[in-house]
Length: 107
Image (cartoon, rainbow, N blue to C red; front, side, top):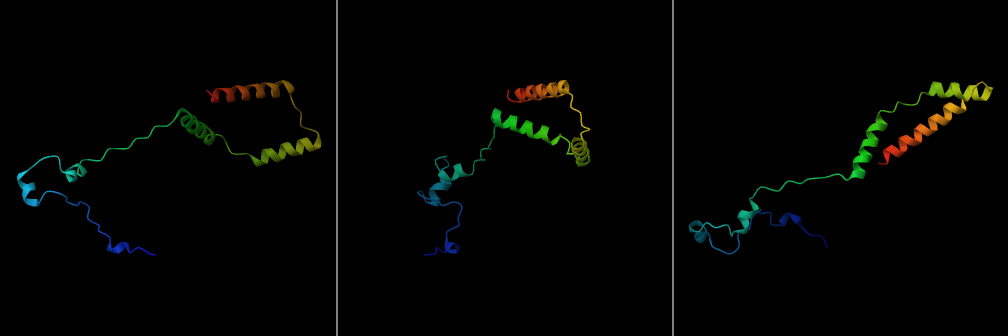
């Protein structure tokens, strides 16, 4: 069964209780309608530490350069031809630095 919402009462304020004659002579804050005209409270949002960390990580990721496909192809070709030399000390140093960077992000 459908409800016809076009016929719904769209009045913002509905006066209940005292008659209009009493309202003009009586000015009190007991009127529930007057409390509706008070300024609305503002909303606030606070981010958790985890959300702030995620936001920081996302910002850092935008600074990472895009992949240089030409360089990738050159390295693949060098590996395939046996010309690519790996420096084990440099590799170990880079891995250790990467792990330290990851630990720093978790704090």
